[in-house]
Amino acid sequence: MTTQRAVNIAEKLAGFTEQWAPRRIARINDYEVKAAKLQGEFVWHTHEDTDELFLVVSGTLTIRLRGGDVVLNPGELYVVPRGVEHCPAADGEVSILLFEPAGTANTGSTPGPRTREPVDA
Image (cartoon, rainbow, N blue to C red):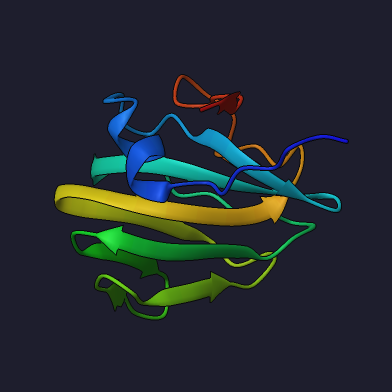
């Protein structure tokens, strides 16, 4: 029998400093829970085949959308619907959790220098 241990989100976030580089902290069915630190502006992108859930742990995250921005504070979440172009941005450092299907590229349909495969935290 395997002993399970609870995932401590604060510990996982304290374990890295690199921004815009998601860390996989849990799996549930075909989904991954990823922790990330963000600051500055990301790239405009879409995820054609999946929704993307952002949950803010600390800081303030702005999700830019072509129709208007969504501002998230700690404890708030937002689901970007599949196919909706968006651009996460943060003036100061923000810690977030992402919930998305395994294999979802962080830059969606816009691969480039900021594309990162998640690594286990």
